[in-house]
Length: 200
Image (tube, rainbow, N blue to C red; front, top):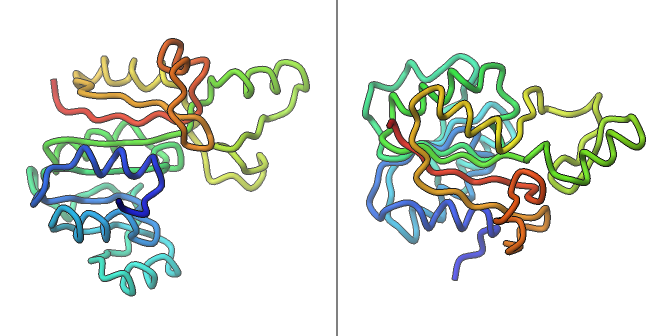
């Protein structure tokens, strides 16, 4: 059993052994290190934060310092089997373009993001008239790195517009459990969404 967070474990479980993986906004390289050790993948992490780059190197992860808002032009089409982006989609300037880039350089994309339509966030905004915070969205409005918050419905509509086929979806609570009821009304009851997708 790995020591990955449950959301990252779901991502890892979706990746075939010996695949080529690109991890966008890879943080300290925890996911890639686990994939290298347990699934024998090869690949790279892209990260902008210098401290995280140092952690990646200590974790034995190949990492390139880059700004995801500049795109993935350093990589040729079809270079990777999987392109992963965990908790980063909402922090880039043009998430719609980055989805296109993910599916240009990779065969399958995987993303995770906080669901801004979660009922507690709706209640907080409606009743208090202030930008909401939750376990999955823990920053104040003036400190948040999140610039394009979206909902599960928003993401699925974007996929439909772009002819992106959703292969699998998982939804979690902020403490990374899988509440059964959230699967029934995910846009209202899920705090974190995880998707696996490819071109239609």
